[in-house]
Image (cartoon, rainbow, N blue to C red; front, side):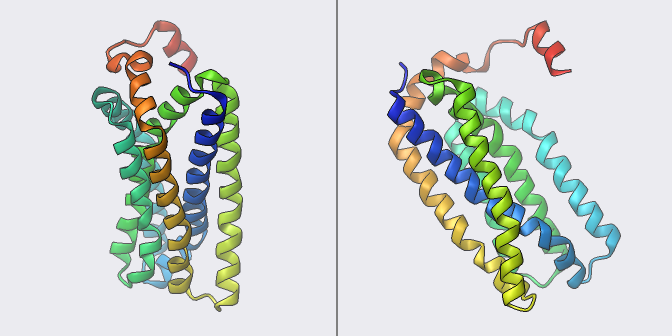
Length: 218
């Protein structure tokens, strides 16, 4: 059963808003994290290691989370867990211990790995009625707006607070809260229809990839 166009655009826009708020938090915090870790006593080597490890976790574990979300069909749960872990960035405001701060940074990237495959699956299922490409284009646009706004907002807060990292990271609780409220609204708005369509679209994750898929991926 396809969604009507109004529901599709509303859902994709709201999921895009969720991603926008998430990127404001992450991309905003990302620029401040290296100098903050050094301020807490971490060496340049540790800062680089944390950054590299976080990116590795964020990408390498997507295959695992994607497989598990398909097998369990728990796409919404994976989204909530993944987006929930974004709280790790605002929580940097309450730590003065660099190992804990480093752990929070890696945890946020773990959240990215958990939420991305599930979110993309839901967007693809919802958008069948109007075109998957159009839906993903709208979602990516909003995502990139957040990626631009985040560093600008954090830079402004740092400037006006004389580089007060505690206030800066704490301010990111605001977009994080908007994220959770929006995601919850989308969940209660369309979860029934999404679950109804998942069985037809995913087949429970039982299908194997074709040879053409692997060639395209390479």
